[in-house]
Length: 215
Image (cartoon, rainbow, N blue to C red; front, side, top):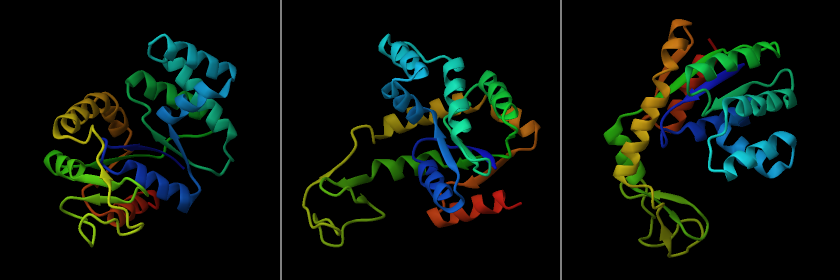
């Protein structure tokens, strides 16, 4: 089974993809991670990626398609793929169809995690982590049991990501809408799009996704 997982930053895509990898043996193909790995790999495609990125240019659709093709070729015949961050344009959607078809695969589902923008801003801006062990907390939803003391390691220092602020989150939301707008109608016309409540708790979101995949 091959799926596209959509949702703005903070919607929980990473968590759900990790669960699908663990529970169904799927492979998460994140273009961002793939590009970073390729740059360090020293392979012919990796060297092309490094040259483009070092020049401050955008990596072409052709190179991204080559990377995805290579990743699919390394997968077992019974392993499904989770596409994260690709496709983002109509041309990339067309390219993905060709890449899959060349390998006897097809796209089964496009799942979008829907979120409320104001609630997502609240969710993200309230996040902080233990500076020592990385345990996550939240100003409203998950405070340490003892003030200023990590529940896991007992450390007293916490940190926040500098980009976890309302302005940045709303900018990311706008970028997400702009990037997904061109591809959703393509997949909706093919009856592939399903939506889940990304604001629900993690287990509920997982259950919604499982129900879609088990149809």
